[in-house]
Amino acid sequence: MLFRLFILISVFISANAIAAIGKGHVSGQITNITSISSGLLVRINANEVPEHCTSGRVWMEIKQENTAMTSLTLTAWTLKRGVTVYTSADSSGYCKVIQVDPYES
Image (cartoon, rainbow, N blue to C red):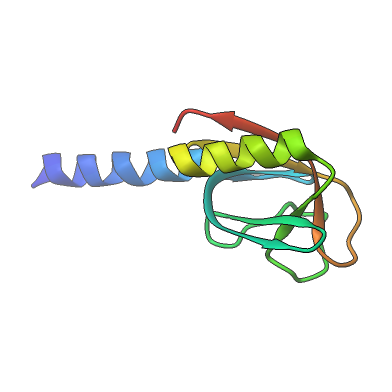
């Protein structure tokens, strides 16, 4: 019984260590994507956004002209890789993505 509890606690701590929210970034799994006319929208974990994204929207936007970021994000989504998404401090509308950094989950 004690061994099972230890395993359960270890898994819980490991899962929480992967998710991180900071002032200008959020790390975790991409849980949803969609597109709009101005670009690609992404959601991370349980609709988490960086602290400075205060518009109340849970989607973060990668502008259409940022083709390298869009390609990298779609690849990470397909391969189920974790990402760290860095955003600008703009709090109106969608939180604007300025960098996507994938990592192995």
